[in-house]
Length: 398
Ligand code: CTP
Image (cartoon, rainbow, N blue to C red; front, side, top):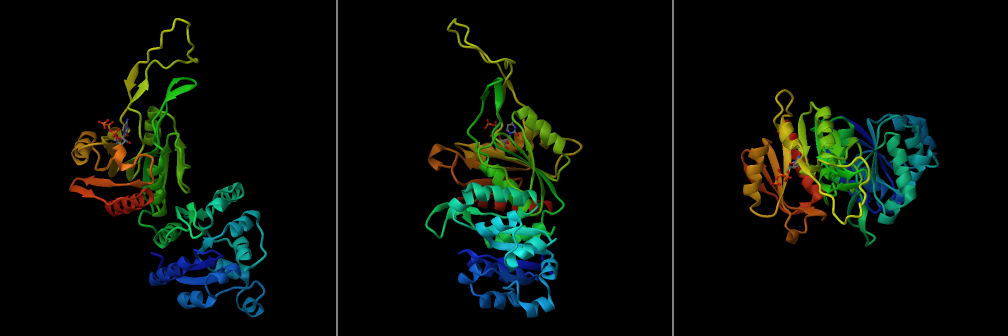
């Protein structure tokens, strides 16, 4: 799907540059042309010879290479591609881009280009989480620059956290999506995520411990495959994904309204941990102790079941409706029953007994229940579960 496309690939200086060599091979295998550019620092990590041998084209390295300027000026070079990919994108190059600096070939190309740009950041975790990098990332995203990764994991420097460059298959998917060529291009998918907050009075609410991590990872994976994602999220602990339409809600009733407003869609995935009840006698003003020593009595009313409502829509039911089921025992039997009861097509079931460490953890072990059986997946990171599920959704909608 990237066949016949030209990628201007800028390699900046980071350990992750070794993965870029494989990225070049995979792009070439898929029929893309790769014009490589390296920063001076990149040459400390991989050699221009390896890069040009794999790309099958000479590496552009110098802003003031006059012979090449005569053949192809940097302005033309920056605009001759269908997509500019920066992998790895370092903190320094991102800072230069955010500030509009142009003091070497890579930064000049990035300033001169009118072609879409995709960054695959890679850096030490402290550098990634530094307020300056956060700020620069925000600027770049509001400039319309796409970003894939970084992932969380062990880093070459010995630390652990976000900062590892996305893996090659993820970068390839992001390239396809940026070129409008991903398997979910043209598909609209609604994803619910996070907990809901159900008010007791203006300052108090009832909530649950959902972090929103799995729903966020899933929305990101679907967007990476090219889907137009509407991400309806309760107040989650993790930041929302990039490249999706974000609708923030608090209560289950608001979530239902937001999901209904987002229809029609090709698929709906309900990953939110929706409160089953709301407080029917929530107070308009802050509840005060009345001095009697008596505690207030809360009346509960059942919340709408968003998943069941969407699955039962007559006119505009999404073609694929997917729910989640968190169980602590007889996982498959309970999830099968839930699939039938709610009328959805698939259920992603997981065992959340405390011994599994899944709730609040980085990993998940799920069983995918479709109309044609139950598939137990191995224990994977939440990102990997999301990527697998996104691929399955793409197959189902193909
Ligand atoms: N769900 C929803 N709206 C609700 C409750 C649940 O959309 N009001 C969705 C969740 O997003 C999830 C699925 O339904 O996809 C499973 O919800 P769960 O709370 O596990 O199921 P329940 O129907 O509450 O069943 P039980 O409490 O018996 O486990």
